[in-house]
Length: 481
Image (cartoon, rainbow, N blue to C red; front, top):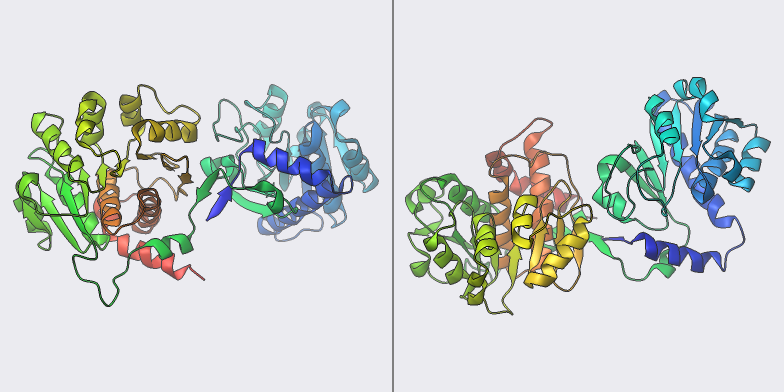
């Protein structure tokens, strides 16, 4: 798993490391990493490094110092470097002196138009981890002129380092070079960060346990249940699906089918459209009522069931069976509007909630806001449940405070029925015995991979995502060393 640390923890770790490191050594090490990535970006963009033009947009403090020292190293590689100083009186003295010694030129925002227009790469060294809020007008005006690829130093300026939120003008980088550790912005707002390079500055021994985690392909491959020689359809996990209605039969079909595609040993469907589900997926054991569905190892309840009295009874029955429950869609609305339905649940029985922003607001009384991680953590604690907060970047929080952030793979999942597919996948993984927090994270990862595969660069459908689930699992396994 990739660890992610809050800026508070990173700054504390940096202070401890700086106390035992020669002055300026860490900055030069970080800046050299920036220069290497900048040279690579120049080569990708122009086909060469020598004779190209780099512009540094330099703010006050150490972030600007990193950019200035990177400019020094680029000058030594034959790159023409111009520094636009937003706060000349607060520019990093040693970095500025080094750039000037190497032949770099210095401009004010008012005199920099020509060099900005002719740049082959622009390095964003405006603000670092301590900054909050959007770009100031002078910096925003500079970046409005930029047409070249942008490399951000540590994080794109104007993007909140701990939440990834953007509240006004902000840099949208082609790539970002960060130092020592990944910060929340890198996983919560990858669309502004671009491709991310981590430069080792010796910080790992000072960081402690990460604040957030992100699964990689090896984690997904290791967690995905595969049948062993001694397994049968029951030991593989029996997934119960209570979904759909005469109004929304497709929700039942997609949810049940996703559980099948996610290699559940058996899928039992319980609901009013059993014949429809059987006609599409004959391997599903279908019945008309949850009360005679037979034993399962986990339930998925909610997609398309409505929010009336009978739907509440269905949800209460699932919650009272003592097996993990994934409550999705209408089940979340039922819990929000009639919280007494949770009285049927044994507090020790795992519950997984999968709200989008609107459902989250109904459930908790307030929208997630800018701090989506904090909001999901609080909801998980409040409901003693794993909360999968849907969005471009999905956040999965456990009641004990653990948080996974899913890597987005485009916006291909923004299509009707996609959530039903995700719920069915989660149900299959819960039935296999996976920890609910991990089950949600693994399902979200494979779901995103399936969306990317199904799309192939053009919009896709929930049925396309469903069909691509096996290929998504194979992809994760093929990327595992």
